[in-house]
Image 1 (spheres, rainbow, N blue to C red):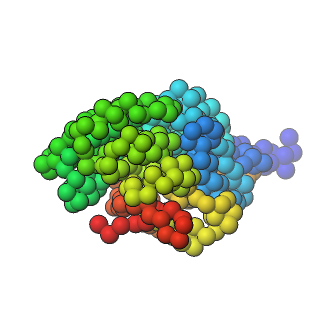
Image 2: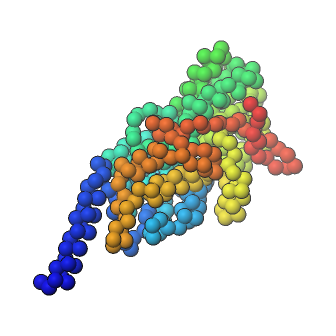
Length: 386
């Protein structure tokens, strides 16, 4: 072995041992992105089916952030979006797929609480961080899963805000419906609890089934109770039908729902004139300049694209902060280091200032009451002063 060859061998060995030491430095393990490979941001949402418009909106928000970022430390960043069907078994299958992809550094998702709950167990097993833009069920952050974060609010905040608004209108006799999902049922039950605690009366608390089209039996059952308000915990496809069928069976109560119904396409357009005067809860409107950019590219936004945009940016900023570039151009990313970087986020996003509490909940979340109004022949969500 010549002197030059010996030096080359020693240098190569040193680089190998250094990389090896970095690889084993993180207690959760590492992600290694080879020199010629992209960094993948995973995404899980419903991209086909009844709630596809919401899922596509989420995908578009994350995609916009990823494409604007372009590269991190010389590696192209791409979005790998998967259709998880907004349900437990399919979300678990997608979680297994993405967590076992060696190029996936983390995930934006999942869209529905019923998918996020079992999928988060898979992510926790593999220590792959996830940031949901839309899963609001309280139990998701109450379970102590360290890899779960959300850029949306939780249902405790949403239920309390909705109940407070109802009582401020003196709507004390309330019928409550929900879609029996982790999201809808827990939200409806928490709303009912707040109404009762403040002296209101829950006349009925009934579950319906996602995908059903005829809710006249349960509405006919509720009608003689003469509620002042019907509150629905669930999604827009069913919410729009309930709003329409309330009118059909002659119920004169007000209708109120949650962020699952904050979608112009699936609630306002699907429900038609029956949605005028209905109320929903959602966050403050995002930055208008961003909305203009987004809609020029994708058309009218629906619900959670702003939260998905912020989630993707937070994840990419964390990757950029902790990734270690090696001599050969590869990146080594510590999984716990990445999770810790996300947990320490202080970010001024398009939805406002974002930081996380120790459970992964977004701090300082604000929920706004919106009324569907009609002006100049157009129906839209108008924020209310409350």
